[in-house]
Amino acid sequence: MSGGDMVPGPQLVDKTALVCIIILFLLFLVALVGNGLIIMALGSEWLLQRTLSPCDKLLVSLGASRFCLQWVVISKNIYIFLNPTAFPYNPVFQLLAVQWDFWNSATLWFSTWLSVFYCVKIATFTHPVFLWLKRNVSGLVPWMLLSSLGFSTFTTVLFFIGNHRMYQNYLKKGLQPWNVTRNAVRTYERFCLFPLRIVTWTVPTVIFIVGTVLLITSLGRHTKKVFFSISGFHSSSAQAHIKALLAFISFAIFFTSSFLSLVLTASGMFPFGEFRFWIWQTVIYLGTAIHPLILLLSNRRLRALLGRGCSSAHGAS
Image (cartoon, rainbow, N blue to C red; front, side, top):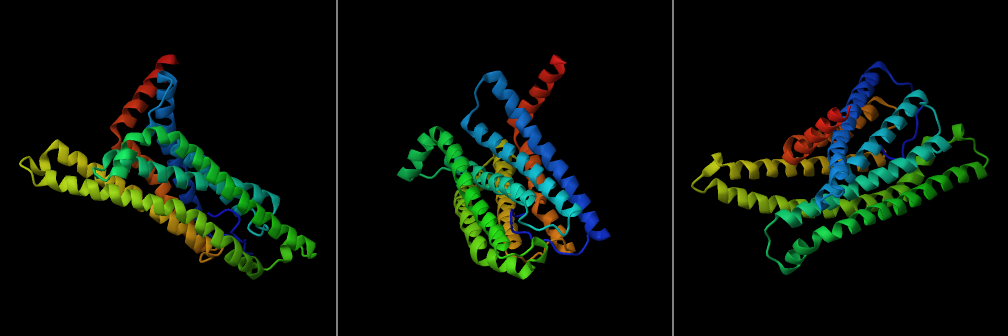
């Protein structure tokens, strides 16, 4: 759901849409639990060891941003459901939009840098620039995290200024919020806010896709070599590479589908409050619910840390 780009319609939510809302809420719970477990696993490691590896810092940052984003999403959807005719630029919507814009941008950037980190660490390219990155990428992780927060804050401020100015312009013209037409709001969004959103979402997405394609290409080549070796498909090395390849492909699919869903939603193809709006909301957050579970199932170290954290908590109680 895009912060500030949803325009309420006068219709009430029907029974079919209510089913979609219930499904959306269940996906929210799954995503909340999945990301919460990742935070718990790495958080317990941080408390015990007083430090985290560079990769784990990116993972816990991504899990925390997704965790916060889910709370904003469900809060906004509940508000929309309870106030289907509310003006989209009222103070409540602006507050929720600020939080949504920040955490959504942070999630995009954390995902992007995680893809870059995996690519540099795992891929086997021999270009001098790539080799330099492989030696220094761990030291660049703090700058990745800071840049993510900086970019997210900057874009959030830009979106807030655009939303607030739109609301102030309507008030200056003597128009009451409930008399503002949907077309008037959509026209401003499509020609002002929508291009800005596309630019800010596309930059991390392009970096993510480049890093993921390079990583999948490298893993695919290595998996093919192992597959046609003497040990073949049943070797532990081949199976490990295949699992890693499938995990990264799923990561790329979920990230890309999330980006496309944001673009389609911001473009106004799914009118606010209608049945297809709730259907699309369910599709958008299906990936955010599934991917944390894939991370937990495919990452043996995460499972081990989670098990150790649970054992420590049980022992302390």
